[in-house]
Image (cartoon, rainbow, N blue to C red; front, side, top):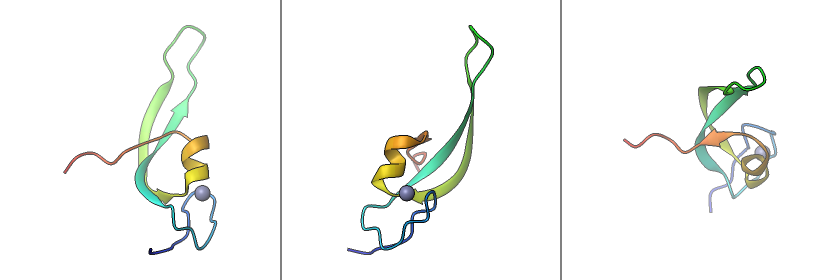
Amino acid sequence: METGTCDSCGDVDRDDLVTLQRLYVTPGAPGEEPEVRTADIERWCAACRTHYPHQPLPEG
Ligand SMILES: [Zn+2]
């Protein structure tokens, strides 16, 4: 399997990378929805996918 570097934590020689879209979540005021902005397309390891907000790439 191809290995690479995680774009989030920088860990090298990962074989569990997934291409996804990073999300930036800004907590809103109490009682308000958080603001969610989509960001860069990156490749993340399993640990980062567990800890940080992201979404699958849009279809197409
Ligand atoms: Zn990582």
